[in-house]
Image (cartoon, rainbow, N blue to C red):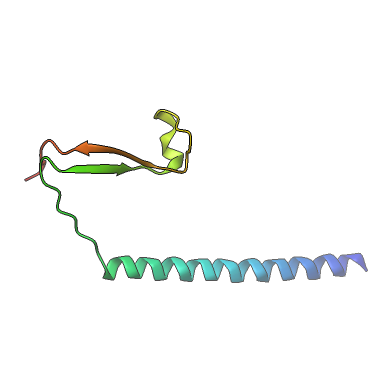
Length: 84
């Protein structure tokens, strides 16, 4: 009796997780297509200032901030162009 209930709950959970995963992949694909069709080209020149954006989980070696959600550092001045 209880085994049938457990199997049905597991089946419902698996179908729900499969649907959520399909929705997530669809949303990721849509975001990817938008980025590829609407590229943002930025030309930075020497002596311009810019902010550096870091992802929070990569900021372990940098100084601790009061609000870890803010991940912009700078402004930094561009001193030279490389590769041209």
